[in-house]
Image (cartoon, protein in one colour):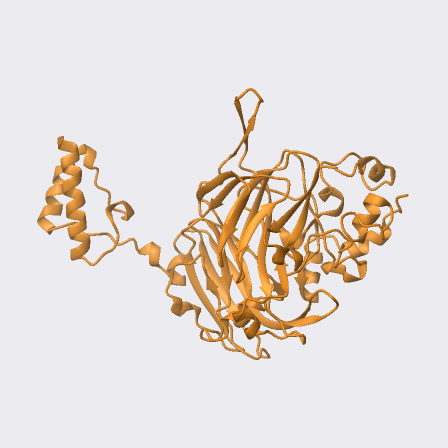
Length: 468
Ligand SMILES: [Cu+2]
């Protein structure tokens, strides 16, 4: 054993002894603020360690710090995340409604976006007229669950934490002191926090074959057009109330993506654009949210350019597995946390409260269905459509109709991408050319989206000139 290895071993052993002595579970590599340069054999420091009887671990307090006063003055970026917990009646397919529980009047709740190392200051307020209390367990935090106790009607609670780990993280109501948590979450009280890696996202490598056995590698910059897709189920009685018995039996009748069944399938506008007839279906006759009368609930499609780096944040908010698959595409990269899990794979599986980041590039003009590759889930709502490029050859017609001046790379330039699927901008985000108002929202949230400049398609569509 050479001298350097021997020294390392000694220090490692001392560190273990020291950790035991001082009751710390942190190992040497996790210590902050005190670094021994063993390679340089800093003998005076080593002698100091020996005199102490072990390493006096400098506990990395910041990891556990939750005091808002301290964190707000820590020099870190602070993000205020203000939510209200409110019960409202919201639509489901078939013209019915259900008794929803929401964060801030929308399902899923607003997406929080921060950078790894930032401070989150979460405040949950419960209006006085709300019947029950609510809590919020943010999976991007690492603080004692005592912080997630329920907040009573008319009250407000704040807690702070450092978003230490990069990735996608669920947040959800923790019920009334954990009681009825299932009802609150499955009725709509869930959302995600996206924590961008401190050093940004990685560029994307896509492998192709030349046909001669040679692998061609193409690299795409880290910047990407981003979407968010949150899978869940509804367990409801015919009257629209939460059905716990159905939940225990795993018998859901509605599978939702971002709160809505079949949220990203064609509607009458797409029929008109593609076929010149709103009653002539583009895909299949099942277009549940087809009418313009459905306004912000009307189903929309997801538009991307060809050869564009697309990043999708996926969370399984529900009670059933999600076998995420895109028909006609290969998932070029799967990341969980900040670690690549797979590349060039067909399907990736998410259990309850599990997430991933899908990076991919759509290669050819066309329509691509994303699904939960569980047929019961597909047939009850877990399917949506990506449209890549101009597969319908609409550019000349759109130009002739005066809707666009020049050919567009995706229909997002005309129709926008649905606000329910567009996350807040992050450090490597490509801005969507246009965003339309789409989602399971209260009227107040619809107005907020309008005020933010999102286009109301139900107002724009009737003004478009007819396409023969
Ligand atoms: Cu709740």
